[in-house]
Amino acid sequence: MNEREFEILGQATAALEMATKAEVEVDPIEWETPPELPLRRAHARLKIKIAGKETVYMVEVKTAITTAVMGIMVNQLRAQRLKWLLVAPYIPYGYAKTLREMGIPFIDTAGNAYIDEPPIHIDIQGRRPEGMEWPKLAEKGMLRQAGLRVVYALICKNELVNATFREIADAAGTALGTVDRVFKNLRKRNFIVEIDNRGRRLINKRELIDWWVKEYAEKLRPRLLLGKFETDDYERFQLTDITRFNAKWGGEKAAAIMTNYLRPEIYTIYARIPINDLILQMRLRARPKGKIEIRERFWNFEDEEYIRERVHSILVYADLLATGDQRNIETAKIIYDAIIAMEN
Image (cartoon, rainbow, N blue to C red; front, top):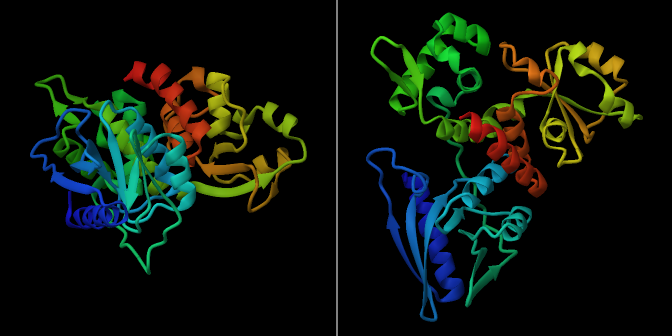
């Protein structure tokens, strides 16, 4: 836990104590080596005692809550066996509502809180922070957009881990130097190992996928948006073979193809620039709040033939979680359990 996270945790617990008269004890967790799940992501243990009832939570501290990370975070916390508490500087009402609906306890430095642990029930809403502005974290190492492209190529195409750096750079659409920096970072984080004369191997892949999905939602996905559109004929639009425009379905439409569980409300298309022909042939009109979003295809490798019309399962999973929508989070879990976990 860094200094900023420690500060947020201290302010939030103090606000909880003032609002509820609870006794709160914080036990920071400092990891010398990457621990095993489910404790890997915990920043601290928190003991909350009210009216003789004591509850222990594992704490996840976030320096900011955004739509991009909400779905990812909720999905990961719900999958843990232990009790988790989310702590942040400020959790806006809409996000707080989602957390309540999904049973995720939280506190923030403004004094908002939700803990439902019978006989304890705390639900404090509507408090706003006073002039808070939180600094953005600097991007370092493989956190940059180009690095995320390299990691995506590696987790989708495992065989690339033993390819030349030039081949990996071509597959990811990045510079050669980016691949070198990413590999150094992956080795340092224990995601790549050298096995005698048998070459390199990607390990701890599920953890790497979780990391990539979160970073993609925050740092790369927003920058891929080429435009939002509408159409007069959604039935015809959905039946169009978009592969003839060198494009693929992502997000909710791809998930609907995979699961038959979700009815798309937003249609995501990944396409290469230029997209003029796609827009013209599909009779799309640019609209700031359109239900059709076209994002730039950011990888150069070819997907397996059986997923010709949609993007890779990992990208579908990432798209769904990035929306923060509850039904999309549920669908993402189905895809992860049925496909991604089985393949990795």
